[in-house]
Image (cartoon, rainbow, N blue to C red; front, side, top):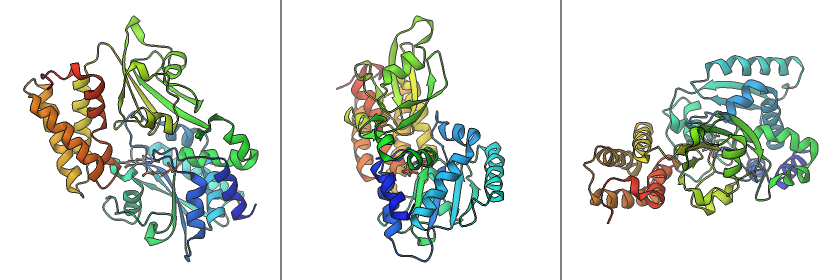
Length: 370
Ligand SMILES: Cc1cc2nc3c(=O)[nH]c(=O)nc-3n(C[C@H](O)[C@H](O)[C@H](O)COP(=O)(O)O)c2cc1C
């Protein structure tokens, strides 16, 4: 197939990014294809730093060739000769698997026009953000860039660059083989295809599943996850990783697709699903989560650098029983400011677990709410 035909097939399939932002994959490729440059790059985002998420590892460990094939199709479509897989630093065992697969593909002449190099991260969550990841590959400190320009126009070494998640690339070979309409007919029409869900917390089967995107959260917990152990009742579920909102029982019939999750004030994120039963106090969980964000904030922008620190301080106060009603008000105000003013998704999403918990589970905050 010609580059235009490949891009069109992927675009028509309505494949959207599996890394969190849900952008139309073929459309992104089209931007890089039309950008004029001597050199273009393809990067696979395998940083997978989101707590509770290990879907990309499952793909890379079990079928590294599907990833290599997806990246090679992208390189053919946009005209790139060099690719990188930016791999989570805590996955050392995957480096050998990927390098062996790359060598096998080379030995069969499948990578004659396109080379792939594996780069290991060093444990920074923010390096999963695509522009921080690009800075890291360039050998700089991993901090997000101001956008625009976006990577498909100006990315690695200021050249047009496609950054896609492992799961996104892994979907591409089947789309090219079976056609766009085949793929578009699977799952939810706005976010077609399948999603790998990693299920953790208070469920009987803590494992992973690949499900069509019209599968509901309730089906994930009770059918695939086998329900909640020891006869306890459901309390809350967090979808999409640490920055996901806490979702109450009444929203469990929402399909695990992109726009359906946004419509209930949550996010699909990485597709991680964390279940909490009735015995859990959200304050403990939220204190840990805000500790995680203040630790992982890169410090480049003030709203995130200061905001994540203040949210953590306030959560510690609430947790040790010294929180005051005024502290809740400050968290709400600060959280709303961070959501609109932080430079990247880390700071923008960091308050979401707290804000959603205040909305749906106010009784857990042991201060008198005003
Ligand atoms: C703090 C932060 C961490 C992120 N971590 C990841 C990650 O580990 N893997 C990933 O694919 N995308 C991650 N993203 C999203 C990427 O910036 C980007 O949207 C994605 O790699 C694009 O690929 P996709 O279109 O295939 O989803 C992260 C974003 C933010 C703000």
